[in-house]
Amino acid sequence: MWNEFKAFAMRGNIVDLAIGVVIGGAFGKIVTSLVNDIIMPLVGLLLGGLDFSGLSFTFGDAVVKYGSFIQTIVNFLIISFSIFIVIRTLNGLRRKKEAEEEAAEEAVDAQEELLKEIRDLLKQQAKSPE
Image (cartoon, rainbow, N blue to C red):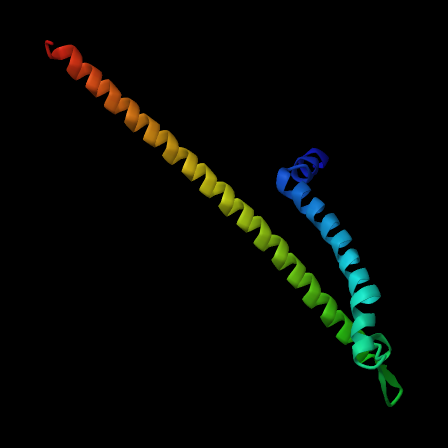
């Protein structure tokens, strides 16, 4: 049973997923710092010193911290947008590479066509008496 679990855990997909989770967690911390330490102070400055994280109201004995919720929404939007930009950039690079490969294939095809024409002309010259 241990060997079976070990084989399962070491399959490529599981390891790739684990790496993705670790990198995603680190990226999330970077974006959270960006939001908390850079963007939100600027937003607060634009809104007259308003700090979302401290916003709350009391409802009976419960304290509803809606500012923290707003902060989480802003974090989500920035993380989502950042991931969108990264994926968009990667897709653009991939399309560019595919276009370059296709152009290279067309160039090879043109060379092959030219070589075939030369071959055919040489055959014709060899057959026809001068």
